[in-house]
Structure formats: C-alpha cells, structure tokens
Image (spheres, rainbow, N blue to C red):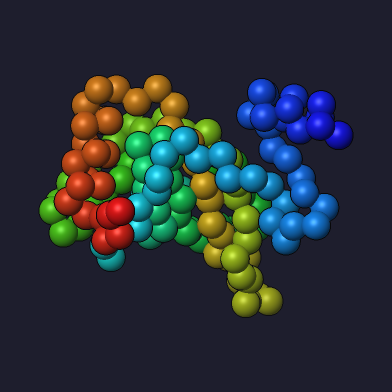
Length: 140
C-alpha cells in the first residue's frame, strides 16, 4: 500500500480514497479565484459565467444540448466591467459534468466544465494575471 501511494505521488496521478466523499484529489497547480459578476467564457458553441480562474485553468457553467459531445477547445474570456477580451485560449477539458436538467421537453442541459490552459502566450498570461488582480473577489 505504501509503495502504491508513493508511486501515485511521484506520477501526480489521481488517488481514489474509498472512505472519502470526493472521488479524486485536487491537482490544481495554482489557486483559483472567483471573479466579479459579468465575467464570461465564450466560443462558437459556449457562452456562460466563469466560476473561477487561475493562471493554469478555469471552470465555468454553460448550456448544451444533449447531442453535443465536444465543444471547440479554444475559448475566449470577456470581462464586462472592464471590457477586456482574451481570445484564442487553447484548453484541455479536465471535467465536464451535468448540473441540472429540469426540462423534459427541451434538449438543453446546464453543465459545469473545468479546463486547463495549454500553451499560453506571454501576452495571454499577462492578460489573465491582470484579470485576476483587478476582477478577483477573493484574493488571499
């Protein structure tokens, strides 16, 4: 058992704890911050509020029809208060889960998605840091 735990720590893999209510360990590389209302994520198929943001990733809510499997991997961030827009953020989906589906006749489902940023440019990193420093509501 000890060797398994050491291997998991070395490989930074998810560890399932049978006695835990959470099925996985949080692997975030940096703290995420909740942003002011009016912070949105968008691309050709997604528009929704940002739940939290860090330099390495973010999570957000969106609506999807039940036929939609994968959304385009590049997204944009729009901050309505400051009219900031960051486009072309390449991402990898970490988690995509259903929040609710209250309608029996509409194929629309409310979902939450967590993504990791991939290959940010220096300018994109600067813009994300600026958003965190000016729009975060829960800085440590």
